[in-house]
Image 1 (cartoon, rainbow, N blue to C red):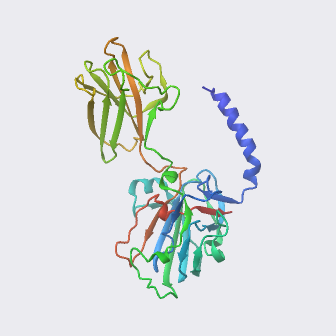
Image 2 (spheres, rainbow, N blue to C red):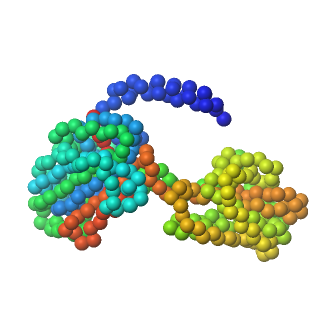
Image 3 (tube, rainbow, N blue to C red):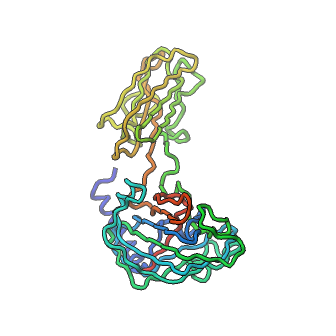
Length: 383
């Protein structure tokens, strides 16, 4: 483990290498990494209705105060067949918002830290677009700069709160013979596809359950008990991530005659701790309380033992760890299974924006913040 002094020196060296680029920076991107390439998904909630409100809340750039003069999106690389449309008025308001209020409410309960500032108020149009963009990724701003919005005056972001951006579309018309009604799901020709990434990439969680050690690692060799010399010991975990958590643990092919302990905790150590047990290290964190569920000896043909735990989910919980323990059939040595970690899917500071869409005339219109890609395009802020 590096010492605090060494970590500080490394951090200073990193800052020194980044300083010239930071001084020359003229744009910020959400997400900060990945927009240099074509995204792996498409966003089509922006501008799909005649009269609607579209909100973005972005906590990606906390820590840096900047003056923003323009916001832009870009077209997705998919083949498109989007019809032209215009609005008699399009406005943009910006403000600072309490990011934690978005996480808690997931709805209209967001808490602004200051008054909305109008930075854009114009008639606006999206031209028809068919086919794919000429470039991959497409240029920022879209066709005829229809996806680039220059502010009437720069807006100073404080670098402390999340950025709140509210687009209001009014009086939409289209020259097409296809009716553009204020319905919840418009014809696909009104979906202007913008570049974005998958929900897993936005949230930063690709697989909610991770095993330690990984099966394919050097330390992840199969583990066997003498009662099942040809069947490796197995641990499975399922978590029902509701207000009341359901934690379900399964072990197989441990000793038929030895009780099995299922350890359940809220913190672990990915490197593991050598305690002299067979098979694996202890990956549970012994410094915090854990539940120990004792199961009787699984005297069955599969060495199968299961346990479940119901408990209220607390706001501070970020992960659940489980691991199994038993005494080896012949040697009576303490044995440990792999450990499994479940990571709750959450939004946090530094992760991308949340988004919402509301159509006051549409049946089933909604206002729920989400990281679903169909409402969350890549963003560029010009400074």
